[in-house]
Length: 391
Image (cartoon, rainbow, N blue to C red; front, side, top):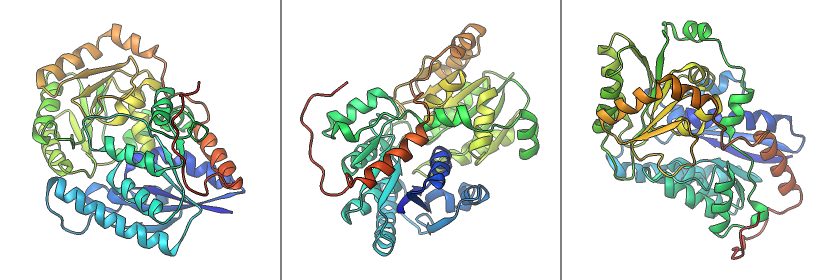
């Protein structure tokens, strides 16, 4: 058996990794070892490690990187990354896996990839090649690409970009998006089941809203929140279900503002974490998904749900034609939501084809890990590729 360390630090990331973990459990060659960190271990962010354990997964290690006090802003993120690097170096040093499977682009994932690479542990990276100009995640992601040897981009455009970054074509496999696969395969709840689980009614039509900070020096959190609130207030017929921001610098400020907004608004509720299945179940039936979460641009096309993407956080990502982009301004958000709610646009959104549909994405990832570990192709140094992009 080859032990593969799998890292998760956020609810969104775990929701994507869940089918991969389930597929790995079926493998006769791979043993997934789950390392939980970041917001999962924070009470302030919903302590979502409980959701992981409720799904029946064993947690091999809990690496707490949020409990220590750090400075605000970028200095705090830098310090958190250093704390994470130290903890991953320690764990990998005592429990050397055959490979690390890393998803995405967050600072804790950057630290995990760096620790593995420094110790000569092969890195396989999911969702490389994306561009998100409004967040530091953009360069975190590209750094992970250069640390990794095996790549699982979510669409053809991202496969080609990774190869242009000098990665060997045979090691860059377009497997499709895990979010799209989740939507097609997940056992979603009925609307009544979600209401019962949450303990409150969610009348239709409703907006599902999530905001994260623009960490690349973009719109300040208060301004982002003001734009979302003004845009939602312009449509009083909508019930507003708002979920919490991530653990990036500025996330706590966003949460405080939006919690107060929902407390004062009769037809609104704030939930720090819905969990992957509840979130997708609500997305499926939403009149519109609003905010700047990656799920708004990556997963909504699979449901054919209208989406409004605010600001620059997701700027550069491949999106479906169901997504309307607007600046972080209340009037602009209100107009975009108004268009998204029209019968014509809703009908158009339903016909959109997701650019991330790759079929059995999780199975492709697991089969590739098995093959590359078995034949030894993850061993040894990487070679830079200077040739043409095939295909």
